[in-house]
Length: 329
Image 1: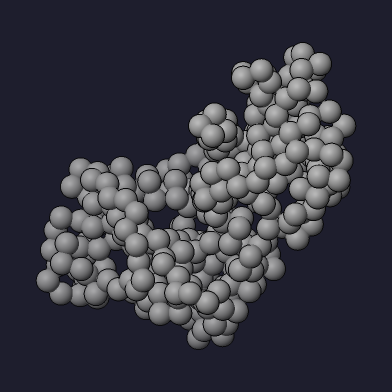
Image 2 (image 1 turned 90 degrees about the vertical axis):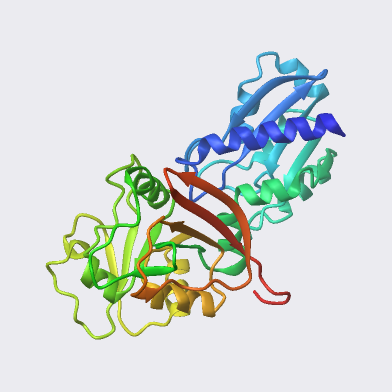
């Protein structure tokens, strides 16, 4: 029904407020409704802190209304003791008779167990309201737990005629789009460049132009040629240097480290290797209005789906999603 969608959209809106603090936990929003009006709402503010359901129920002033209320939550309530008690238990003990859930939680210690607890306690449970939107909200969390690897974003800038670099110094970005890159970095837990990029560009890979955490810096050095004088080796931010590992071995290592999102900012060779193996989820391509006419060609995407296009003072940024073939991953 329309009102169900309205309340779930509010849950999603609230959940986004936890974008900076919730990870590696999922972003979750919750709304308590009684008599056709919202009487409480909340979201998961920070990892280790109260969950969305706790904050929503705690914000209800007239507790007597809970007995005739419905709680809407964008993700299945947890059923286990972690850093906080199970939210499913709190909903039951609060006397809320009806629960509407956006999508189930893929985390092994929840994954249907929260719903089962609610049903066993006699609650009416509805699952799947705005399910795709709720899954999209936590696409990184879902990818990590279902595919056992981080969500992978490829990023590069190129000339209008499709070159990523040239023999002469060239700048593809303006001040605004450089700031947006730093915002991207702050929203990813790790960032990877190849040997050539580390040597030639000597990047810092930090978020110095945006307020937010620096990602774990990663680079590849199969021949041991990266000098300690590089910015990546300055000790200001944790850095991991991989030797003979393949891309899949690197992703396996990141999974063991609990890294849910990876930004790949390497050159054409590294980026194309991710594309060729089908190991990418999102690609951000910035195109400058200038032409180079020669140099290193930009990577070529495969199975891409356009998502958005934005013009920032002549700099065109396009976002693509990877359309995965059936029965792959």
